[in-house]
Amino acid sequence: MLDFKLSLQREPRPAATEGLYDLIILGGGPAGLTAAIYAGRARIHTLVLVGPLPGGQPANTDLVENFPGFPEGIEGQELARRFLAQAERFGVEMRYESATGVDFSTRPFVIRTHGATYRARSVIVALGAVPRRLGVPGEDKFFGRGVSTCATCDGYFYRDKRVVVVGGGDSAIIEGLYLTRFAREVIVVHRRDQLRATRIYQDRAFANPKMRFVFNTVVEEILGEKTVTGVRVRNVKTGETSILEADGVFIYIGMEPQTEMFRGQLELDERGYIVTDRRQHTNIPGVFAAGDIQDPYYRQLVVAAGTGAIAAMEVERFLEMYPD
Amino acid sequence: MPLLNEEIRREVAKFLEGIPRPVRLVMFTQEFECEYCADTRQLVEELAEISDRIVAEIYDFQADRAKAEELGIDKIPAIAVIGEQDYGVRFYGIPSGYEFTSLLYAIRYVSEGKTELSDATLKVLEGLTEPVHIQVFVTPTCPYCPQAVTLAHQMAVASPMVRADMVEATEFPHLAYKYQVMGVPRTVINEKVHIEGAVPESYMVAKLQEAVR
Image (cartoon, rainbow over all chains, first blue to last red; front, top):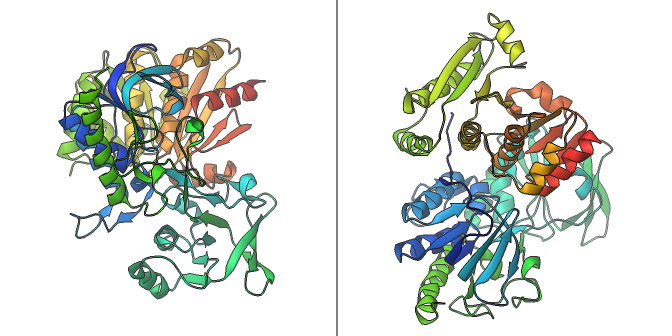
């Protein structure tokens, strides 16, 4: 069935030097867009730099079943579209650019993108997290050519083929189940002795005849000359290595925050997450953070949205106290 | 049964109100052996219905062979997005799913005849002395793909040396095979340089320079 998705910014980009905003939100996922909805309703002059994935991680998810208000679940892409539409409805400006550099040393803060510079009286950093990579030989060589972190993008290319899914959490199992629509076999390779995914997904996965599970096992190398032919794996209990034949590898071993741009300006924890207090303040007054970029524990859509709302309400208070 | 629902139509209408000059969507189809030709044709006609700034022109790929050759159309369904001039902006396969957004952006850039590329990018494009052909392979379910497509199409609008195609990989499996597409977006420049993923503008420019070196 055909569908048609829209995420449009209405206005062309302003000239390179103009643009002082009360608030610039970095990131257009659940946290950033919830913040945008709150900021828009508070009539705060707001720009959202949406970045490469409008709607954020839900846009890369097949079906979202744990967001309240959608008893039948909702397609991740549809939810992402609705977030964007709702934020736009309250008059915030959205641009499909990504920040390439920031200067938080003086107010107004400076945000640079490829080709533009913006200034802001306050900032919410909500850039989320990106899929973690395995860091094994063959991964870089085949990335985009047999190694993927996006089943909805690339599943089609594995019709009647065998794929390996690495990981045992919700994403691994949900995306693995999605891949069974195309692939003839989906082998889940997980380093622990049982899945970590929510029970309801586990039940579905174990009931699916196309899914197979290899526990206590890590991937050590992605094999192939021109195309992926398999993975070399090691059983962490026995130390034995073996080869699993496969045409493709999908990696779902969690996410990591992308915070290099902020190092030296914002306080980061040992894993690179931005450190915030309970009201989403960072170490710099006027700079707030929300969503997965500051959440090493939960990384749930509904939590990200919640912290986005808090950040926007704190911005409102901050701007009242420090208008300039 | 319309392809575009009321909500999408309203959004499209609002977006197209903002474009300065009319745009022709020159579509190539045929009656048989083309799974998405009928839908692509309907999509183009619905857009023309929504806005009087969009003109739908439908050609038969076989019967109107000369027209296809004139526009360099070599497969169907195809849409050439043409404004005051033909910038070389093409869609092969139906722009459904996320690619519908790419189509609307292409319409806007072609209508305006200008882009949002950086000055540094424009300078590189001005210096081009040989033709550049960019093909961006996509699937309709890839949220990262429109970024790559829109970037390529802007380069086509900005430079008479550049033409840029969106190619929907699932409709042209032989091309997906030929160019070893196993993931999208995959961008192929002049048959020799490949880019995996949606990359920043500066990276794409560097790869483009590599392709003409």
